[in-house]
Image 1 (cartoon, one colour):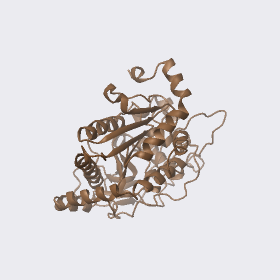
Image 2 (cartoon, rainbow, N blue to C red; image 1 turned 30 degrees about the vertical axis):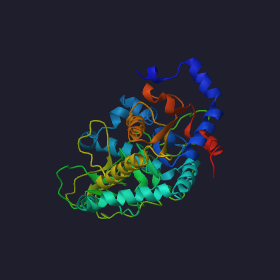
Image 3 (cartoon, helix red, strand yellow; image 1 turned 120 degrees about the vertical axis):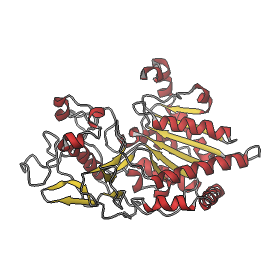
Image 4 (cartoon, one colour; image 1 turned 60 degrees about the vertical axis):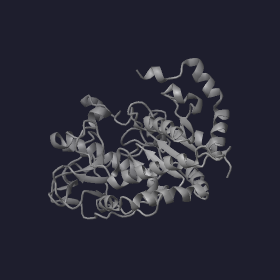
Length: 408
């Protein structure tokens, strides 16, 4: 099914040959834009040395069990096999904590800073503030359940991502981030009916899971398994024998400022480890096992960060209001949707990009989609083809090339 969205051989060759010119076009669009909406998927994290959807579970321990990523990424394992559950999510947690976000984040942050110096950023913030005045009670309720404090209002930039590594918080402000599938740093009680005060909470900064490197299982307690096999799986640099990242085998550099812009938890007492189960975090209220607040497959118990979702809705509403306000004038609002590494396995982000582009045009804005993807760079909807710049390459190399054509 995915092949119908893949460029044919002739078109793929043309896109690759035109890489530099396509990036130059994208640079002009970004320079001319009043607002940048960054939309990222797993392909963007791949340049930080992390695994993408198709490779994350490609390790011998899972292959021996006949499991792929979709099989493992199921909440049911917490009850039926907690060792497998915490082995996988614990190692993902360790991998994300260890690896540094790549340079592309910082390049985009510089573009953001340029946009936020313009009047449009102030206009966006004013519209969000006006929206909040009309729903102050609702926002207050969301903030009380938020796992971290968040100051400020997003201006002419927002990041919408399906990535669960929380790397955006090393570079972008918390008020300008929407994680549609959650992130591995935020945890929740596995009991949906738990009436605890702490709906969501952050994992401690000194947390590290212990995972058996041979069978990828996590024992309940640090001292309950053989010390030789209990060492966390080691980071593997790119070599002749390993070509792609997988859980426990990553290629990135050491993380320098982990979660620098993620304020400490407002619900700091949610995380609890009990006697003989120090490797399995629990809810401090009801002592049920804790789980990462990540949307998994077949997951009906995920608790979204409602305050974060509300900020995203407020910002997008303000975007459309400003499009409408400037519609028909000599200065329509120009928006660049910069989408990087969003594939088709879970197409949430691709859909968000295309729907937003269509809607902002309906409100009178001028939008362009820059889609960067080494496999599926074409628009899924033919109606937006004329407003899409397709770049068939990796995220980091494309952002670096685009940066050469942007106005600093």
